[in-house]
Length: 354
Image (cartoon, rainbow, N blue to C red; front, side):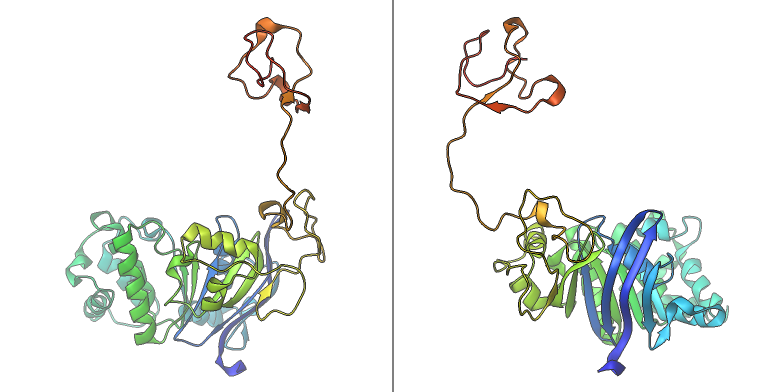
């Protein structure tokens, strides 16, 4: 089983000054064709994980092994070989393509830099790569601004395919595209996966595009792994409330109710929350602490519904300063409960005088 692992990431940590963007992320990518999805909201550390795997940002700790080699210790020609074997497709193709270079020169530069084709054979090789990416070879003479968003993203995919990589990091390749262009890009990824036996890490915030592309899914929250497991099982019955909320955002079909986040036998990895997880308690940092998603998840037991007394503010003297449209008093003072009474200025019950 260990021989099938192409990339093994264990306890990866990335810090930017006092901010820990990635905190103990572990995942394994098998040899292709294989896909693993890294899911989470904006700011959860998904892109940082992908860039740390490719040595584009420095890692603060942990290990990254590619075919048994320590990636963090690679130098010189060995690092160059690794970067040829592992490529990234950035989220914004506009910023990854040089606006002053034609498409043919952009792709041909990669072939010449890695010694994969002579200058005489670059044109034919570029045309073949464009055709493989479902593009007209005549686009080689155009500039990036003359292409649509979907075409630019396929140009970026054709460029990374020029070096015949074994691992791809797809950093939200469809987030800036319309629905039609998204479908074409995902169909292209699915076809290239089978034709080139590719393994890839698909970074996305949309769980709806994962089925059919990824066998495994890792859910990330605040730089930590909230849950991981087979895609079908994870989407059908999330083991963590945060995964359920991600499924709701994506509009995935009727996910099952989340399992308890208290310790117990589970077939998938998820946070071990210290019971109880009260909504009112501020989450603590460090191992064995309360679940970091506690403030965003519903309480385990909801209190019975009961009537709430009307709000009263201490300042009631100056009736002429009453402003019915102001829901809170100046200074942000919290209301105190008291029986409802009318405003001395307008006679309307329940709204505060200033």
